[in-house]
View 1 (cartoon, helix red, strand yellow):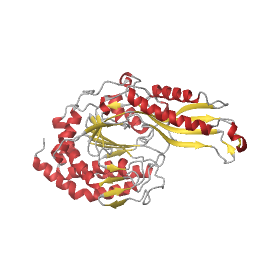
View 2: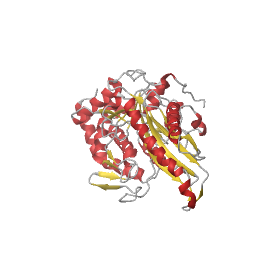
View 3: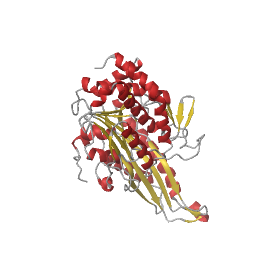
View 4: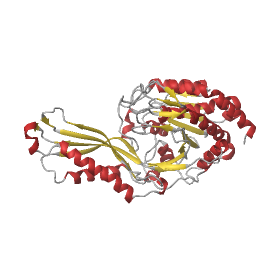
Length: 441
């Protein structure tokens, strides 16, 4: 293991190179990378990896990946969209970093500035994607650049970085990497975790609920049960479903999360003319569900909930439910796993206290490594605020702090860590014995 003197020099290099990392982050935030528009941001990542000495490639995401049992429903065509893979010292069994380049839509309401013009203020850098998760890219690259200066021998070992698309809606970018056997002995995802260890997440299903009726002129609206009325009933029923799931299926990995299985109505669409009774109504729904369930289990539950709520509404309305994105199963890495202990110990060495460990009622691409490959994976990233909301921002100081931890992790990885496949990974999910992960789609 490197000496404390080595880490002192490393920490000094992290501080000296911090401004370069912040400038890189500004370039990355200024490249809007919503789903279907990731290319410019991926080119920036590829250039940064190349400047660090990585061998860079652009693996495609197959058009047919949505048909894979583990895939989500794609949002747009995959032609011209790709992952970026950087490898240092070949594809050996080293440490893999995984980050997603896609960001959620920004809109304009509530933003104090243009969401794709990064702004620094009071130690924060604001802009869509600054927190989730381009600040994590800056953190990892800062650690790598400081190691190249202060401890170049650490980078004589295999290290890989995979920048993926569609984490925010399907996970198909990382799934494509898994199918290509892009993995390490362990995986760190620099997602925004407030410099804690994010070890587990729930299952997530995206589904559209559509109600169709006959419509009519507004003068008969008082005599009709309409899709508008139905949506009001359905929203209440789906909201209750999330509370019921959270009550009926407690999970020790999510202790402290008040309601892990939230059901969020992200979109409401209805009607096309003020003087016409709406003939269709549609809800875009995100459903959290327990670990150990499949996405089909969750879809059956939502379908049953919707059909029950529609009973008694009358009229000639027809309701359908259809998956439209995420089909993600829950996952968990045990807090006692050697990878979690290593990252926590390195955080303590850099900052004086162990990193807290927790789970959230959300998901990350760590699920594919834990569930399908039996490879330990966790999230450790900077402090962020208002992710997915207006004025999203990352705390710049936390990028520096997190880089200091990551440098220690990389330095100690080969010396102190002997990771075995599946070591204390929670054995909960049917996907561990489910469909084989192969390149045959």
